[in-house]
Image (cartoon, rainbow, N blue to C red; front, side):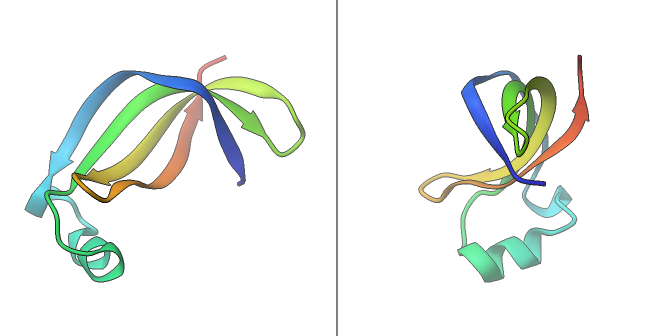
Length: 77
């Protein structure tokens, strides 16, 4: 599903770090070495049809690499 973050991400929490991430080997192979973290937060997202909804989003992030693999886990409205 294509979506775009509108504004900022709030209530950011770390879910897992380093070896506790199931997909750590794929992340390192695809994007490079780094201190990978899996995070979650709440954001307003614009969907394909133009509607804007509040959603819980999850993503991976490493210092110097940035946010990768953003995905919507559930809608909150």
